[in-house]
Amino acid sequence: MKLSDYVADFIKNQGTTTTFVLTGGCIVHLIDSIGQHKDLVYIPMMHEQSCAMAADAYARITGKVGVALVTSGPGATNLLTGVCCSYYDSVPVLFITGQVPSSQLKRGSKSRQIGFQETDVVSIFEPVTKYSKLIEDPLDIRFELEKAFYLAREGRPGPVLLDICDDIQRADINPEMLRGYMPPKLLGEDHQLLNNQIQLIIEMLKQADRPLLVLGAGIRTAGIINETRKLIDALKIPFTLTWGAMDICSHDHELFVGGFGVTSGRPGNFAIQNADLIIAMGTRFDSHEAGPNLKHFARGAKKVIVDLDFAEQEKYSQMGMKVDLLVTRDVRDIVRNLLDRNLPSINDSIEIWKKWISKWKKTYPICLDEYREQSELINPYVFMEKISEIVNDEEIIVTDCGSNLIWTMQGFKLKGTQRLISAFNHSPMGYSLPASIGAALANPDRQIICIIGDGGLQINIQELATIDLHKLNIKIFVLNNHGHGIIQGTQDNWLGGRYFASNPQDGLLPDPDCKKIAIAYGIKALEISNTDDLKKIIIETLNSNGPVLCNVHMLPGSQIAPKLLYGRPLEDSSPLLSREEFHSNMLIPPIT
Image (cartoon, rainbow, N blue to C red; front, side, top):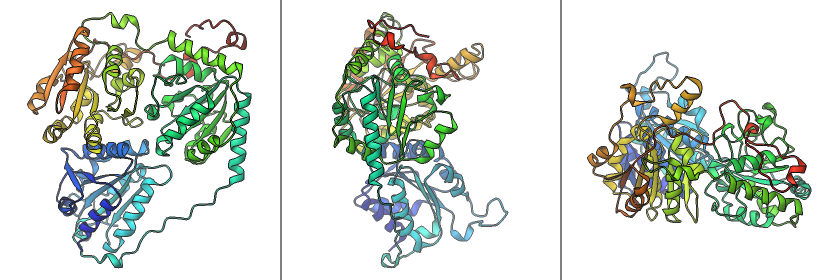
């Protein structure tokens, strides 16, 4: 059996049916085997970075391991940005790179390169993968594939990479002679420790007047979304969601506070900074959530943090944040055990706490009335309010980076079974276009809403050809502020408003016509330039057959509000209620 045929069979047997590829001299045998396989589909992309990002989104939507295959040298190095997206967001993806024939490897030689397009791929990718391995012996293929798929899924998921020499791909093997991989034996659970931890959490809940659940992306990774929703209903206490978990619950839930962090709405931050108990599950409290100075985060709260990755938890003591209970264990254990216990009933103080949160939500909306009064060009918050009202309950929203990502996370109100994905932690420009392709092929029955900026569109604009070729049901909304808007905000704060390299008006940054570009690729194009047409053209875009690009002309200088200035602690955005104020007549404290 040809080794490349064995690899194709193996991928299919793992449940993955769609692979994303860009051909090249050292990957042709593997792509040929996948192309001939009756149960596999291969999608040629226009750039290797796009292969990685499409496979990443495919994995996020299906829950299966995504697969991308590219050639050696520049083909492999072009993957790097997309691999980082999967690594930092804990997404299971298998990346296969072709490598020069094993006889042309430089091995220990001091020569820079022996084989044509030879690159030490493993050394480059080791820091941003869970496992990275060069395969130069055909007898290792089963072992390495089994190990790679196991590690991609096991514990905290993430990407893995196999670099397979060209001659190894062509080798003839006997599958019966291949050695397998034996996963390490897991340590037995300490049931007494788990019971003690659960009991301590319940005791802390009983004593709390202002408890708050913080739910992160680990909830989805653990496959316990429905159980977590039951826990929310059982505890009857307010909850907030990190960006990676923003789609696990409808935003109209009465206990949902909103998002929190340096670019999130005020109600969520007020709740975080005034809580007396934080129970955080499946989140690592990155600097975008907790601010740059962790010792100021949730300043008056006892903190319970459930996180499988001990390495993430080490930073709390390093950064000066006091944590009252660190639980290094699968979040499934905690959620399921809490559901099995007699949970404390709601006390009068918690009812007051919920009223405060309700008041904050009404007093500090993201989309202000004054935004809606603007008729010429489009306010980003009005756009988000309107599109989230119109989009069907089951659609998939894929957003990019920078301002359009933050506007989406602040203003898009999720409902039903909608999904919202992005490369939240690496956050490169251009992610959402190829990711929309991966999402569309992962679930062809659902419409994909791609939200991207005019700058991000240019990074992977070549994938418009892929979208058109496959007639994918992707609706692309370009939030066009004619420049790099989020950078301009930074330049306003730090550099006196000198918009070097961020504003086309300096005559150096190109500002192409997005509508003309879409038409050149064969994609229907629409434009929105005033609020009066906003609803009508959004509906026309969504109701059109096949792919559509809608060029949304934003108000010049549109910025993010609210946003904590870089370097300031999160407490600066959130007034602290005294006990007397908390039990008072619900006056809203001033914003500091």
